[in-house]
Figure 1 (cartoon, one colour):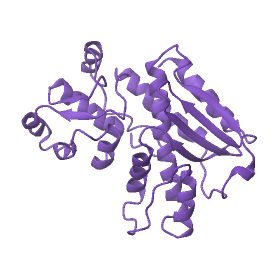
Figure 2 (figure 1 turned 180 degrees about the vertical axis):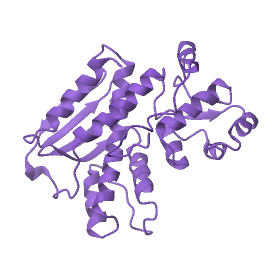
Figure 3 (figure 1 turned 90 degrees about the vertical axis):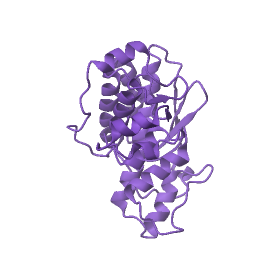
Figure 4 (figure 1 turned 60 degrees about the vertical axis):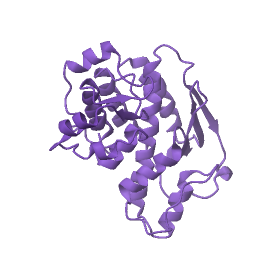
Length: 271
């Protein structure tokens, strides 16, 4: 993986993790999509924005607290940081603090992965993602966050996944890509009696790779590897220009391993 791309994002994350930084790290791409990470004295306490932020939040809660009592679950509102919702769930004893940390960490992992992949797809173009750190005072916090993360424990895991993604020739594939079925009979045949036997039931031409991984309780790496193989077998295709080029297919066909199963995780990205 091109070192310069990782080092650029990594440098900003290292600056944000300094004890003297309290504020917001905002990443904006060329289409105007903005991701925000909020820090308190160098500790990451919240995120917001990005592509499909409500779905991202719902995935994390479903993953780590799937049996929320009816009426206890809600989305962060407009302009509301997700730490405020986590605070509410913790104080109501709906979730324990360790699980809240996992919810926040998994959401942050998704954001960092998407941002890093955008950089990977635009090598040498530093204008693709605009990075901005905004210092804030403690008085800007609506309430004291009850959970926090060390970003330096999260980023290494994400960067390893991005490296493997690049090595497999998947640069053109965003985890927000939507696969669609083009040969349902062949798809059912190829997935029968496999770990992805339920895939035909969840491929609805509307779900992103993130959502498919969540529904099948597998890693984003595993579902992407499977969809790529099925695309080669002409069972599915990626909507728009999200699929693989001929050269990328050649790279993938050279063989890939099962993923990052051997990589120890602190905050699980389910890789």
